[in-house]
Image (cartoon, rainbow over all chains, first blue to last red):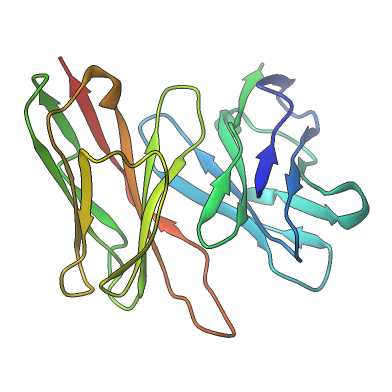
Amino acid sequence: AQSVTQPDIHITVSEGASLELRCNYSYGATPYLFWYVQSPGQGLQLLLKYFSGDTLVQGIKGFEAEFKRSQSSFNLRKPSVHWSDAAEYFCAVAGTALIFGKGTTLSVSS
Amino acid sequence: DTGVSQDPRHKITKRGQNVTFRCDPISEHNRLYWYRQTLGQGPEFLTYFQNEAQLEKSRLLSDRFSAERPKGSFSTLEIQRTEQGDSAMYLCASSLWGAKFSTEAFFGQGTRLTVV
């Protein structure tokens, strides 16, 4: 069965520091993978997606993610975090519908 | 097009009452999805439509839940005899799907249901 695991429930990063959010997926075929962000009271916004091709994917707001088939991972990274990046981050894999992980809450300290 | 819209944004209802939510997808999108999200959890898939056909329903969609997309455009999600456990954010999303391509899913702002 398709599934997504986000091992970190909550991460705190200092403003200006680098960020990596982990995502592991389970899917039988070549996966379509996504990262979404959700700010309080806001809908889900797509950060980036992987369908095929280059395994390093660039997204909005300076985020990138790397698809590693051997590790079944799709980790999200940002070189320098801003206070406005504090939010809930969801990794998802596409079957007939998106299957989401439980999310990682990012807090940014000054 | 302003994206996926959902109505109402908030709904408070008494236990046992019926509620209905509406979702208007992006106009050219042929797939429409319903999800439920509770506090501290990721969105959980409920059901999806391709045009007017409901193609998949999650086991989370109990008999009290019904969804329709009568003309392949907007969709409604009805919950009958609401229970406190139905309190959640109900999210709608849409995408354009074809045999050889697919766009990502675009989400609405959600309808927050509180059952008291």
